[in-house]
Length: 201
Ligand SMILES: Cc1cc2nc3c(=O)[nH]c(=O)nc-3n(C[C@H](O)[C@H](O)[C@H](O)COP(=O)(O)O)c2cc1C
Image (cartoon, rainbow, N blue to C red; front, side, top):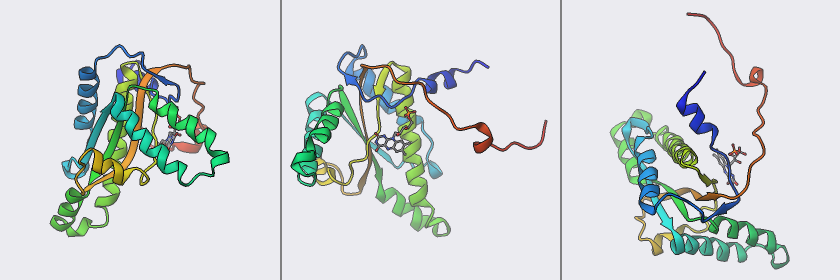
């Protein structure tokens, strides 16, 4: 069955070979990212996702922070692969930082005490949905990306550098750029392991 959304999300992969050969303008890229975040659902329509889009040298600066933090904890003789990996993230045109606003979550917890323990979980789920929406929208526009979790290493320095409110909690980072390598086909578990179906209509 033909389905435009399935076609689009079929293009989304973890692209680790990122480059700067993108045909979209910075404005087109940031509009695409914003649209995807805005259209993603959130619990109680709380819209707790916050996003920082770093282009060019600003993105490089983020990865430099990560590099410095890692250099402080990874033994020097084992640092080369780490350095290569971090450099590969900086090789694209930008990086998206996904945050969740903890003040929004606290307000909801106060307003709806019976769901108190659920709101932090729904925030994580909402963040994942926003990340997936952005990742897929980029893929559908021919832009490669991958998903990283170096938080909390860069959190404090990034907050200082980009004036991030204290209530924003960094959850993930997504470097993006041109697709510089083909990726092996995705493999799937057997459907019988993952799905159950009952009834008919
Ligand atoms: C919640 C989540 C966390 C992930 N964390 C990382 C990560 O920290 N580093 C990384 O390289 N990939 C990360 N990935 C990417 C997965 O490894 C990848 O999506 C998976 O292997 C399937 O490959 P595909 O993205 O090409 O379909 C993450 C994916 C998800 C959904």
